[in-house]
Length: 106
Ligand code: FES
Image (cartoon, rainbow, N blue to C red; front, side, top):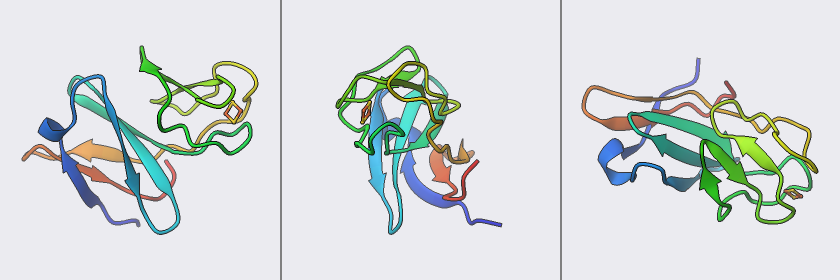
């Protein structure tokens, strides 16, 4: 089973914002919606662009390259030209407000 990795605190991430975290094999975007956090791979399934820098609104991120939208909770592609789901990762907030992530796909 994959280890939980401490990556940030809930107070360091503004509500409605997201932040990019780089690891050896994968880059991850972490989104905050109120008291909830979500994590997806920073990789568009259409043509491999980084999603980082895209507009994040109403639980969706828009790819900056061609405009496909993805649900940040499920990774599901919501609009063309992307059809494949983006990888999601298990993420939680512990009792001390620390955000913890597992790098194994959810
Ligand atoms: S690379 Fe993301 S929509 Fe084309």
